Length: 357
Image (tube, rainbow, N blue to C red; front, side):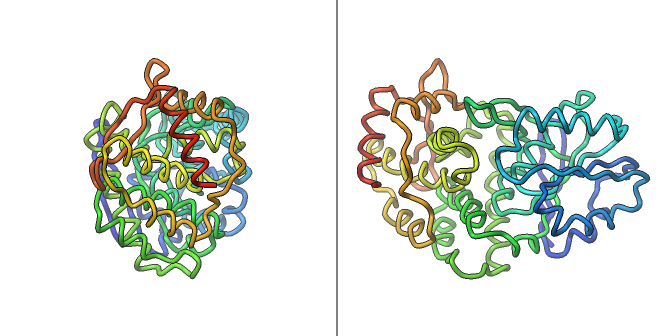
């Protein structure tokens, strides 16, 4: 078992990573709760639901509610339904919400917790590789048809309990999705970490020891940044490397048509190309492209129109005064935020799409 402590301006919480933690969740709760609502996606409930419920028997009242798997559940309709469930189950300000599943469940249940009775405790119990990123840092949100995560808040969990045994049941596309964020953490932090990740073959069964080590490193990268900039006023923006175009692709194609990490992977390739142009430097574009291709990331997609993409990129939370801001790299481990005009962005996107296709 490995534990990292995250210190924010309002709370300190532990991120526990290890094997077999689901059957001992009650040991890692920061205090005793008598009323608990578990929010779980339908797929995870079918595989692991009974294990978590059984280990929480010390609580007087444990209720479970499920949501359909997939990004489309991060909706105003599911958000409102979960608030109604919280009321029906008589949750009060001393109750707990458990977000049990991937990043979608963490974002959705966390946003419910942040707004129910002006905020009650919640913990993250991630079950995907991608959630090593989304479960840490306190960003919770739902989507709007106009853009991803446009309705949300900063609301940290009181604990993150990450049982890596759950990763063994992930489909290939979810493994790809999660590892894109591990790649991102390497690119914005450390050349050696990035190269280490590129040695991983996602087409073969994951090596648990290697995976845990890389997830812990990724969590460490994010924790260091979040502790310095909890509310994304400066360096936390670096964590959005690859996300400006990635979120636009997700939104334009329709949530669930491409996974978050698969879209971010394309966004990172674009950011590397743009970094070479802006900083007159060489980036590991080919190395990343070859790794993504080898590991069956969908790099050939039905591209939306350039104007639609740019409009979506302007809705990115980093953008100011309708000017797109992108995180680029001066070198590996040295990210920077750059403003881009519509004209410049259009020219670079057209060239990138031609070359990628």
